[in-house]
Image 1 (cartoon, rainbow, N blue to C red):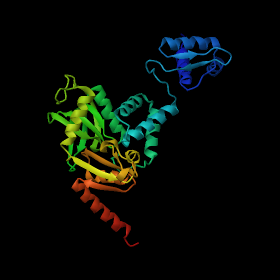
Image 2 (image 1 turned 45 degrees about the vertical axis):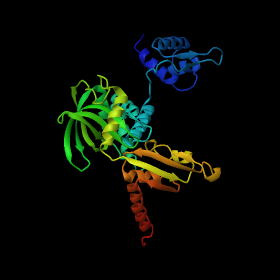
Image 3 (image 1 turned 180 degrees about the vertical axis):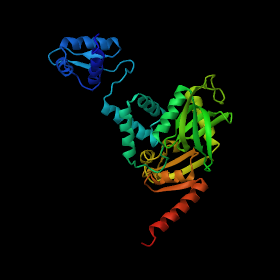
Image 4 (image 1 turned 180 degrees about the horizontal axis):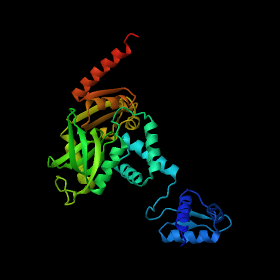
Amino acid sequence: MTDTTPARLLKLLSLLQTPREWPGGELAERLEVTPRTIRRDIDRLRELGYPVEASRGSAGGYRLVAGAALPPLVLDDEEAVAIAVGLRAGAGHAIEGVDEASVRALAKLEQVLPARLRHRVSALQTATVPLTRGDGSTIDPRTLTTLASAATGQERLRFAYRSGDGTETRRQVEPYRLVSTGRRWYLMAYDLLREDWRTFRVDRVSEPFATGARFTPRPLPVEGGGEDGGGAEDAARYFARSMAGRQPELRLDVWFAAPAEFVAARLPPTLGVPDPVPGPDGENAGSTCRLRSSCTDSLEWVALRLALVDCEFTVQGPPELVEHLGRLGARLTRAAGAPR
């Protein structure tokens, strides 16, 4: 293999990862080599585990197909920047459906980005004004990637933390896992100073610093957990138990003057799924629905999400939510009738 072969193979792989079939002659022309060299390079890629499929005939060519495992991807500068910016935007604003996996991917990508591309990603992020929905806290994606990298690499972290009452503290922890609830991110970690497990809201974390000191993960304090901490299921159980003790449970009973499919598409999954309610004597069946579920979210956030469904609704319970909506409604009415 000559010194130019690795660079040529990477360029060939980049072309093949475009979703199209490439005639051998066109590949040879783009890479400025002979068709015979292209055939040899294709064989080398196959030896490396890339599933390259060839079709015969005058219109035949090569294309990369799905294999049993994901091969390493080759991205050009523009593609790498686009992916990094997209992952940052999704992770930083806790969009529903963008979970820990996207943050791990972002951490891996930013770790290998050349300095010039990291600068471009940061510049684009800084220059962009996001339109958030107002139901969650904006997070610096660099904080998320630092936490994710430390948890994956089993590396101790230091950071500043602001509690709910505004108290500022310095923490040194062994990060275990990031958890996304759809609108917020949390870090599960063992606090070395307090010698106990803690759950931290990531939007209250600042100045995270990976110390470089490695640690062996401790088992989570959950019943039936494995010696190695138990993995995702135990993490989910511990997180749910941790959060349940922080916020009183709300037992929701809400009627909506809209079909269940309409309401479900506009409610976050954490609030539950409404059931269709048939009308009297079967009339108007499916035109209304009822939501009966439990959550540990704040009254303010639940009230906002119910209002964003954009249909008439009636709250039967809990009483504190009914009272909060009454006060909110009166405030909004006064605002709408205020003199100009």
